[in-house]
Image (cartoon, rainbow, N blue to C red; front, side, top):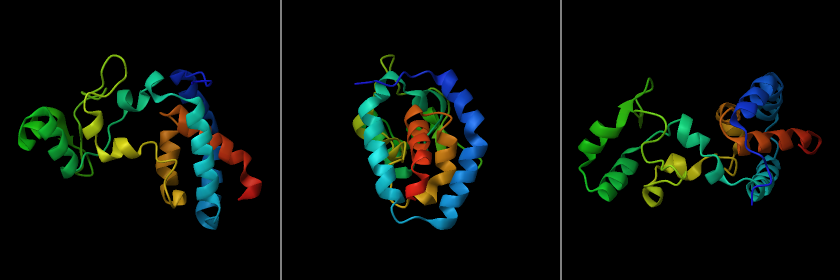
Length: 168
């Protein structure tokens, strides 16, 4: 499946080197809010995920924490057969914005083979990641910019999107 070579250090370097250009591009998209942005982005998302296998990377699980909402806590606690309060005590911290996040990276549920121990009950943010197939994509451009530093698929979608600028 993977035809895209995943190299996280190279990704970080490329994302850093193209960040200013990407910011400028995104600022124009935010201002313009092109009608076809979602369609183009969703097509690119599908193309990229034909080439990239998340299980070969799992960098998101290794380096960033999703926001964990109450429903996520309830689902995961139930699967683990512990009380939600015990789940919070054992696995979560409140961040600067008062959101629950995992205490540590990598994710405590990431297994050595990059599979998720709680996959069926994983947090909503994990289910939706990397958000490149979301509606009203222009609303999450700041988050997308950050994610280009962590996710090869996001970087690739954004890189290909820049090539489509004449169609936007």
